[in-house]
Image 1: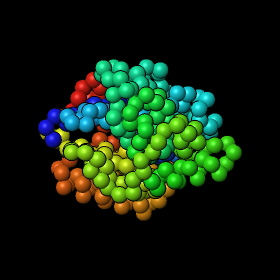
Image 2 (image 1 turned 135 degrees about the vertical axis):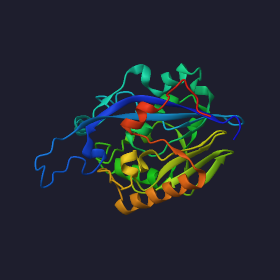
Image 3 (image 1 turned 90 degrees about the vertical axis):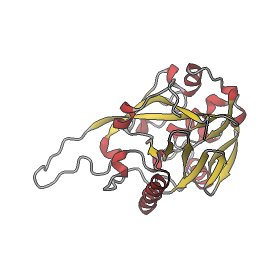
Image 4 (image 1 turned 45 degrees about the horizontal axis):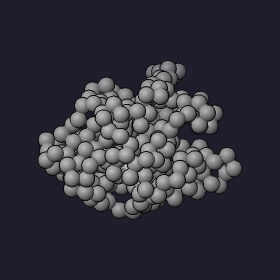
Length: 273
């Protein structure tokens, strides 16, 4: 679509054992019975879309304030510590490209895990705050997970406070065209419903599968399972669907937590077209 562009924000990074993202990354074998575990850095990414007719749209919000320490459970902080400076959170990232929170017309959250959803609290002044788009299955899953326990969180990455920020939600249960040049596609596996983003820019089509397929290693071939997964067969179906979309549009895939690809990406203030 002529005039459609986007920029990528990196909201700090997390660190964890590579096996957390790539199941079997450090597995031993007959010739290497005591492999060395690998501790890696993984980026947190968000996408700001500049639409020639609809204005600014935001895909994912990144973590919320306090994600580095007090906001999450001690176990989560120990296994997957976050490293984010105040100027890296979503509201400050928008300022860096001259966009105010009040200019964000629509907000799409790929799924309700803390590193994609927590930053919603920083977008209260956005028109898109009243009508945040999420997957109905993922939203329901997150509500159950965070309200069945007094602590308000689950070991699957959901936190009650992320759902209780005063936003209204538009829940989707099927693939859709959000507006001209912008498609939302649902994937299984990582959670019951992850919203992926397809942008038909003038020069190239781009696909953002979010955590349905977090990196090129997971995508394969061969497929490498993530360790944090709700449905392993659903993950295989997600990869199959992603490959079909890539072939259909001859698209470039931009992964959500790929430490190698992130080094090659051009981040904000650069806009892809």
